Amino acid sequence: MENHDLLHVFPEYQEKIVQLQTEDVHFRDLFDEYHKTKREVFSIKTEEVITTDEYLKELKVKLLHLKDEIYHILKG
Image (cartoon, rainbow, N blue to C red):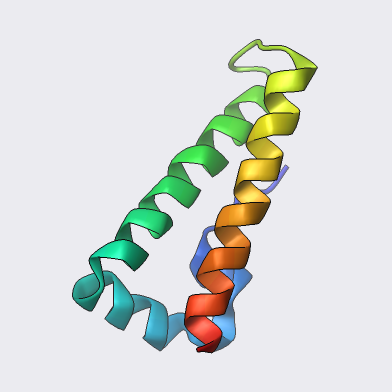
């Protein structure tokens, strides 16, 4: 399983991501929370961490919401 960061997910927005990380606290918080959650999902899927299917589903939904909010900021 690959563990891509947002720079790989949104390659067309790489410059804007770097800029927003330094200039926008809200974006930086979303960015950090996305990567923290992504690492947790990755750890569960690679069986480094054991948890319930329900919790994994909650994390995946959270990732989708974070990614969606980040995308809207990048697009705007």
